[in-house]
Length: 313
Length: 279
Image (cartoon, rainbow over all chains, first blue to last red; front, top):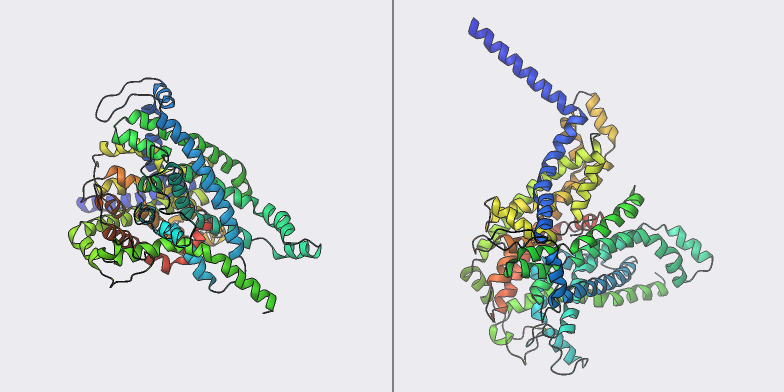
């Protein structure tokens, strides 16, 4: 009898505990934080914390497997004294400027072409999007082979068409050609993103606006300047901002295609940071190089929050 | 169709042609190289645009039986499937909370997720390698399962927040008036409506983690731990001798899972891209 009553009591307690937990989970002020906490924990441990470490590394003489000491901004001063870093700094802007510029122009033209009535539209769109989907490291291997100094199919075609003089440029062995090659592959990979996003922007422009402009006597050029471009501006801003940060921080293409060479002429911050931080072991200096990506990230985030998200809501 | 419209349409196709060649030629050339006999591959007088001698599968057999390619692919699959699943679960509940519930600092948290979504992986890989070592996961594929969610969770959360906002609040409230709890309403009402969003997030998460390179390259190095892209780019290149045929065969084979998904879910990829999927 006594045992039985104890059993009943625990069952009751269990029921009421479940009911109470259920009730708490029904309250937004409780459920919200519970649902967000796994994501928050992950991002604090593996994003925020490493970021603080990067800040610390950059002002320390950290070296793989050795205790580190605070050395102030000496890493940054040393970096500015090194030719490799100054070259990389310049490369990053040339690379990003050229790649984003071409992607914008080609992406806009392609999107306008695809915004017309076409045969096999879905198929064409699918084909044009393919470079974006395939693993970049692997497709860049294909480009590496295409730019090979002995068997380059690019040079073979150029020679066959009579555009190049034999033996044709040594794409990955000469500095300006190497930069061109790296930019071309980045354009190749990043163009689909521009195309698809700008196309979505074009589709959402109401047809009546074009009809009204045409009725007022505006030609195709005037319609492009006074209807298409102004209405596309928000979309173009998003695309350029996103692409800037991801082009600026690119790693895969340069790592596979040139490893930063010849003589650092294609190094970007990410590839130089890896070379200095891991291959030579100077983590402090490597972290300082990586942190140069941060100001650009801040500008993009600021612009996104300030202009783009405001328009979205 | 009038004559003028027809010419216009043909002109558009002609203008598209160079772009199509630019986009597709590298794949064509990769596949071609992987099927050529070495004799033809290294013959400088041969035409590189075609296979003129009999095609061969020797590069593929060499890749599959003489290298650890199958192990790398298995590692890639394990890492990709696990990190996609974990990120999708964490991202879904976070997105639901951030888009639907009112609680302390919800706006700030939403912005924080958006900001981490923009952080490039190449900014943090050096300190993250240290964290991975401290966690005892140095040179292990499990390091990738743990670190890939750092870029997948913000992405999934951000994408799904958009989808959850399109589900009318009234639908959920109706269910709750009928006696369902919030979690039941989420499970039975909101998630089924948001299935296209979940599929889209899963596809992109799968693609991003399959294609990830810098973390895989930094956190793993042993032949039995690396992923397919790292294996093909680093293990198949030994010194100055390149086995171009096998290298291209590896690049082709390791892209197959993504191409298959892509062919079946093309429209999801397009809609996901326009929703702001970019990495």
